[in-house]
Length: 226
Image 1 (cartoon, helix red, strand yellow):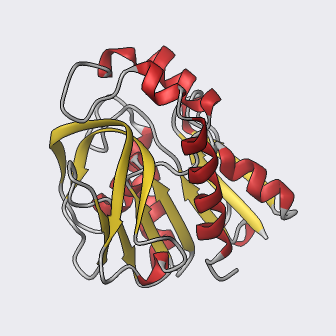
Image 2 (image 1 turned 90 degrees about the horizontal axis):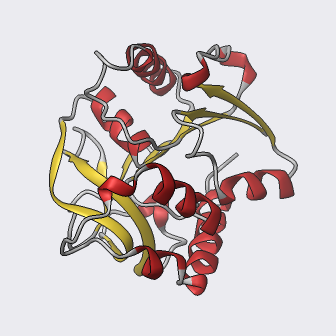
C-alpha cells in the first residue's frame, strides 16, 4: 500500500506510524509544506495521513500553503480516499468539511483519558476508554454528516468519522519520547500551569503510556480497510 503524508513542521512527523508502515512493507512519501514540496498525483497514493503542527488552520495569512493544502484535502474527500488526520490534521479536515476551528476552553497537553461514544464504529477495535497523548489549544465543531467518535473531559470533539473513510483524531496515539521531546523543545511556551496541562516530567516519564498508545495506533491502522 502507498501512504502519502503531510508534514507541517520538521519536529512533527509520523512518530510510531512510520514503524507500523515499514513493518507492513507500505511505501511512504511526503509533502513537507515547510520545504514547499509538491503535492502528489491522485494515482500516486492510497492513503493520505495529515499530521499536526503548532499553527492554526485559520493562519492562511501566515502560511500561504494552507490554502493549497485545504483544496487538496477537499478533493481527496471527494475522490473517496482514505484520510487520517491527527491534531492539526483533524482540524484541517473538519474545516474543509465546513466546521469552525477555534480556541478551546482548555489547553490539553499531556496524558489524558479519551472515551469513545456509541457512534465510534471506525474505532471499534479500540477499548471504550484509553489514555492518549494530547497537545492542543484549539478545537473544532463536529462536521455536518460526521459521526462523533470520541471525547475527553477537556475537549468534547476528540475524534470523528466521515463517510467511513475519513477519520479525524484530535489526540495522539503515535507519540514517542522523541516526538514529545521535540514538542517540548519547540513549543515550550504552551506548557503553562493549567487544569489539563502536565509538566514535562509527567509527559516523558510515562513509558507505559507510550507503549500502550503506539499499540493502539497499530490496532487502529490495522483495522482500516486497505
